[in-house]
Image (cartoon, rainbow, N blue to C red; front, side, top):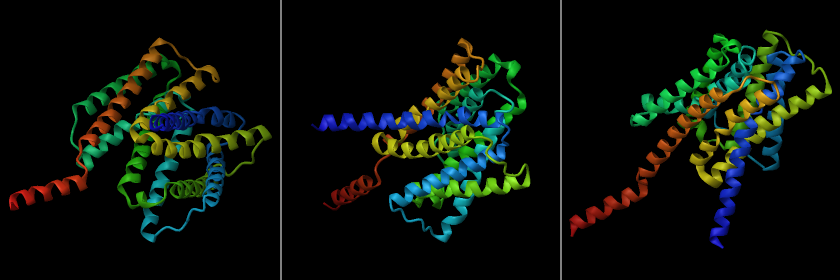
Length: 319
């Protein structure tokens, strides 16, 4: 009976993880047609974050979450929201210069930079595997860009690469600032709400907030807010609870795969065996980093056990 429950829990966790990474990879499917209908990037982002915040806030209300946060947590939340919003803005801008599949694949290098930041600034032990993974990922991006060089502009690569920095900073900040003490769903709501406020200001300062051009456009905006934002975030939390962060992160490799498939089948973007090789190198590098981090955590002693062990040693000496 226990084995059956464990199997069911694993199946649910894997399903949640695949849904999370797969839905995030759908961003180009909904956003690019909106840009094609004449909506500005600022308007698309404002409506996306506004609808997402409303949906996430409704979920929190239904789950009776406490929206109150301490004053000391406010600044970290604002800064994290800025980095998260910047990631969304840069990723959307990159679609104007390079194919969406390549853009999302470049963005997916963020786990590599997260590990490098932790080594450089938070005293994590250096690892040969880490630097080998970084080299593989760079080679993978170069291969991927080379296969469709005619449609790849250097400016687009730089913009997509900038999302690696902004999103990595966001991920590290979630763990290393006081914001980590806030309930995950409430924190997600505030990140989305503040993002909507930032894009409202950004839109007013640039193109203005345009009207939604058609009912199908509204449908795409709703799906953009629901699937790659709210559903992706919630299923990520559920996946971690069921199968842990390691397996969830590995299954996150579905994100660039889905984005590339959307680009190929929906937007007729270029794809061949060399493109597949580039994606494989990138996904392999990320898996190497995640597995390396997992093994490191498994080798770390549990503080309480260490404390009890040391106490036992003192008792031995006493006798």
